[in-house]
Structure formats: C-alpha cells, structure tokens
Length: 328
Image (cartoon, rainbow, N blue to C red; front, side):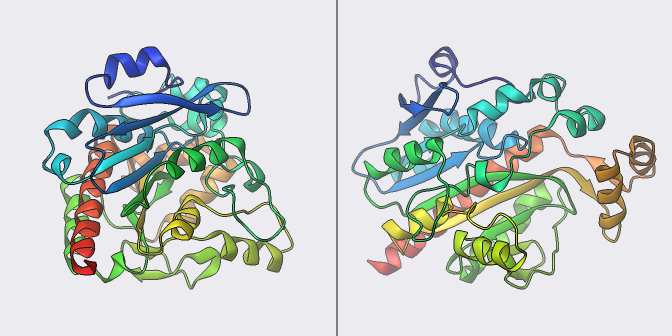
C-alpha cells in the first residue's frame, strides 16, 4: 500500500470517491491549493465529522479517510449516519515533504523520513489553530475553512481527528471523558489494535497539555487551553495555541463524542523509548538500524495503520450512536 504522497485533486476524487459521495472546494490553503470537503450519506441522518492530515508527517490518516469513504456505501452504518470529511487539511505540508513520501511504500525509510519530514511549530499547526479561542492566538486559514464547512451541518454526534506518531510502543487512543466511560468501546479498540498487530502505548500523563492517562493504550484528548497553559508555564509558544478541532466541536455541541487516533510508523519495545528517541534526535542511523535488526523497533505496515483507523472510526461511531439513543 502506498500513501497519498501528493495533494488530493479533483481528478483523484473523481477516480476514487465519485460513486460514493459528493465533494466540493471549501477554500484555499495558505499557498493557494484547493481544500476539499466530502459528504456521504443520507442528509436526514446524524452527522459524523472526520478530519485527517492536520500533521503532514502522519500520512496514514488521509488514506484511511479515503478508504472509509470508498467502503461506506456498503457499510452497515450507511443507514445510520451521514459523514462530513476533510481528508487532507495540511495540503501544503504534503507538497513540501515529497522526498520521503515518494519513497514510502508500506514501510517508511527511516533516514529519508528523519531528513525530510515536516513537523510544524505550534503557530503553524493545523490541529491547534481553530477559531473561537478567547485569548490572543493564531488561526490557520485551512482550519477556518474546515470549521466553516462543518458549520453548514447540524451538530455532530461524533468527531474524529485521524493522527499518527513517528515512534511509540503501540496504538494510543485519545478519547473524550464520555467515550472513556464506554467499556464496549474499550474492548473493541483493544481488539482492533491486536487484530492489526499493534501493542498498546502507555504514557504516564497527568493532565499536561490536556493529556491524562486513563489506562494502557488510553488517554484523554488534548485541548487548546491546556496547551496554552503549558506554553505559558514553560515560557514558549505563548500565543501560538488556539482551539483544536475537538474544542471547536464541543462549542457547537457538548454532547459530541470526540476521538483521536494515534498509530505509530515505528513501534518500540517497552523500556527502550528514551534510547530510541535519542537516536532519532541525533539522526544516529547506525544505532537505529541495529535496533531494527535486534527487534527493539519494527516498522509498522501502512496497510495495518489504515485498517486500524478505519475500524476505530466504526467503533467510535457505534459508541456515539449508543449514547445518542440513551440521550433520546
């Protein structure tokens, strides 16, 4: 499987999703490229929002969004929800890192990835630059256009932001506090990780930046205000964090269920994280090669990342539908 190593164009959408849903240009990126929004499903059904590609060095999300659209007409959920999707937000970022994306074919090339990946600073981060924050902040034009696209629909029952990690111990599910109280969802997400050969990432987080550990493989979602407080405490990026897509969604509907996928490009054996991260920072390719040979790290197949994300989308929507029935 190959990633979407170029911008999503009208030709691409005609080829891949024209029989599944409708699409339109919802705005222009910072560099003038088209930004597309896609709608699929029956208009009277509850809305589910999905975004991907906010971070351009996390390539599985856009591909998973497109795959889900292609599968959706024959999916059991087609009779229950309507999808509003923006599959590639940081389009400009994809263009700027062609050198490593063009070499990405199921497994990343580590040296190329480290050398050419684009990781934006907070002020340019398309996930943490949504409108609506009451403090001084920076918004990105792409986030504004996506926000406007979603505003044309009724309040969503679920919002998913598809992300990934460069290196981690396994799958990491970031869920709002309501989703974290759903034991059926926990069980399904753990099984999704197992079915796709992912371990579970464990991180002792205590609320910094909004992240609070809920259990092995599970954490709360971040939020813009907590990110800003962390920045102020550490005297850096002080006005660079605005709202994120989840914050923006909660303003519209506090009952929306929000989730973030985090599946790694490279999985690390537990207890080796700091050692491997130092090698990444130092670009110590010799050590990284040794770690791979010794099975301390393994490259995660793109197809498994995409499969896990697609199944996670379904599990979260099902949880939101269960909650919606209870609320009614």
